[in-house]
Length: 632
Ligand SMILES: Nc1ncnc2c1ncn2[C@@H]1O[C@H](COP(=O)(O)OP(=O)(O)OP(=O)(O)O)[C@@H](O)[C@H]1O
Image (cartoon, rainbow, N blue to C red; front, side, top):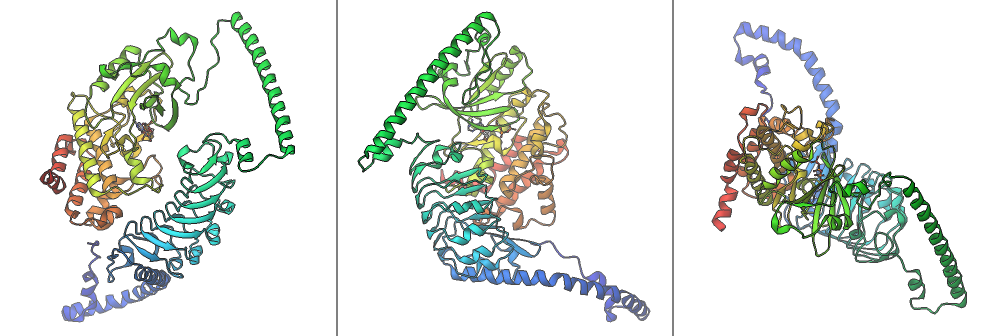
């Protein structure tokens, strides 16, 4: 399986005296003598260089075996005659174990003391979704390089140990869904590199401390916390705090009076303070009202004096930001529905008033999640840099709307005005394939199974083939895993189809980098062959679990087609595949065939790539889908 070593026989002819004639022997002897000095030196150098590495690996190996023997659960099938670097879930670099991932193996027992701490080069430790219990062993503190610690979904208990707050390298810490208790310590502030902290579904009590960290992700939901949420977290989603007795932004405001009176009678001093405070507040409100009246009067005066439009208004979702009085005349109020049956389910005014949150900024603009009444939720894409005239725009949108397929995100409506172009799509609740594959960031996160990956690959291929069947020039133009969204039942729906032809000249080509076919110079010029290439990268992503590069920077992701080709040329080894997939039995053949499809689709020359119809057929012939059909 591993690439064959360079044959030693090239030196053997010189060194074996029996294998040569007498004359050749003397030449060989002379040559051997000449070679022996540098060879001996080289050998010495190799020994010197490799000995510390080997000793590191030997001690890592011993630690891994000690860990395995102290835990119960599904057996870790590690081949003892092979290097630990080839063991499932283990990754090495520079002769040391840097990653240990054994998620969902049903592991039971307590982590032994003095074992994991010996894996001194460890950067990632993932033991998530097992049944490990007890407290965390103190020798974890010795893992000075540990950046990612995933222990969610176990039964670890007790207060968070002191040593945790000395693990300065930690970037992501996930302790969710365990049985930890005690308070959430302000000493988390020592972990200055921490950007994600998950503590949900434990038994933490007390209040949330002020944490002056740059946390992108934070969740303490479903604990026994109480009190006010520090203002620092006011921008986090409500779901990060639910299931506690917390108050303050983003939850409802704290009711100071209720909190003070709960279970106690108010002292007369407290009553006096409240009365004085209320009076002061009343006076303040009065002053504000007077000020507003004054401002309104002067604004009216200004308005009467000038025909100029009012300053841009900013709503919480920003869609209204450029709304002006003149827009009403420009048709700002119209929302055009693609399908008759959805007409009047809501109008533009309702859409703009809806509570909304930013889902992300993409190549073509910003996307919002808007929750309207009556359980309607939609995704609104606010397009930027559209240079088309109204008629050109409407023509293109009609073509996009006509691409009706069960695996495309349905376009519900659009809006065109001089300053504002909106596309309204059905909202996909499970997020994108990219997030599911690469964002190991929540207690509910589980790796995608092989069956699910195969089904997503096939349905996506069918949808792209459908787009290609719409006409000679029809193509998607921006296939990538963040544009493959999923329904609650993990059915894929492709988004952003047809938008490449709406992109203005300001769209940066580097945004598509990892998925972009080599022949594509202008991202607005799309082709089926380029779609096939991008789809091939997506398949390689599904099979290898690696994210393709998203920019021209080499360190930002992997050049997947090149990497996969290189790996396969040495004979497909288990290392090519996502380690999460190695647990599945009897799927190796399908995995290799899927990998080959990805490689064929990413041929450098466009005419050597298969068509999407051919790709779909090849996928349907995987034994995976035969067994589905048999079950049906
Ligand atoms: N219909 C939808 N339902 C749910 N989430 C969506 C929907 N459309 C887009 N999103 C999410 O919104 C975010 C922003 O999407 P957007 O399409 O604007 O940019 P992108 O896909 O990240 O980048 P690009 O535009 O370059 O393809 C992404 O995380 C995407 O998964």
